[in-house]
Image (cartoon, rainbow, N blue to C red):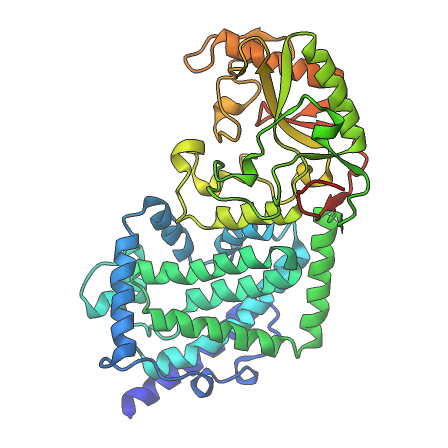
Length: 465
């Protein structure tokens, strides 16, 4: 009893310290610790060291140790272990769809700092009350993140502070950007799993922490100040992202095979041969759709290239927003490496957004962007461009191997002069008829004067009637 009283005194002292530190750092708590729910009353006790629940904790600890062999997953564990808000915000900026910073997103930053600091107070009492021994201490083994061991040794394991923060920020960001809620919450779930893999927490610690985050956020929703700041954060997000108007109106689109009868279709996202490794959401039929204006311009490209002995081969055209969301979810799941050897062997999964290979809002969803290549009518083969469609690597850049503006080849060991020249044939024809390229992909072009620059379409890819 005496030890419990000492721990409870330490918890109360630590809560007071948190409140003082928050005030010193300019954080405005929505509630103090005594006004927040008492998690000792809300949560069940952690599993005893005998029984099936603790057996599951041990099995999950062993599972976590196997995950350390995956270098990509292990790297996330180290990133997730950093205990400061700026690092946390950087982790969630990708699934959120916007970089979070004090300078760039002041209202979002303020909401997150104040909310997480308020919720953070609730974990202190149960940690002190139960004072549960951590996995690495019980098994006398090193954590994956050894740099944490000195600070965590002797500190209670139940619930997990990292997991509470990770799930808490996921819940908050999902309210600001509900379109990305599935991806954001998936990252929040992984954030908690990182603590199991690290050896810092038992699975039951992490599971309880997700409940702690939800309990804390429900309390915040009773604060008028919190609700007002949440609206400011939503407005800031809308303004900075230029959220486009969604619509399922397909009346201004045409079937590309009807607009250009001799076009060749190989709709990769309808098949399983793509970087995701499965048919992508929204692709119900292997057809290509474009706005009427883009189709008209592409017909002119086709006529131009036929005179040079080529036909157009289309990999993708209009792409519904649900397909883009599918890509974002896929990118968040670092454990899925099925197609890595074929499409992105040298590019880390967490760099695909940063390097421009995947976007949370795609130009394809506006209906005037097309991915294509050339088909040689003489050889009846696809023209060799020195790289395949959707290859995530620098070799896919239009300027790799030469200067696209001048068409001058630069000798290298990966793209031949002929392959670079083939790319220029396609590029120049597209430019002549009103399309513009992007820096990362030789196959990607968008109509310069696209008719719906502020609209993203949501109807599925299937033949228009």
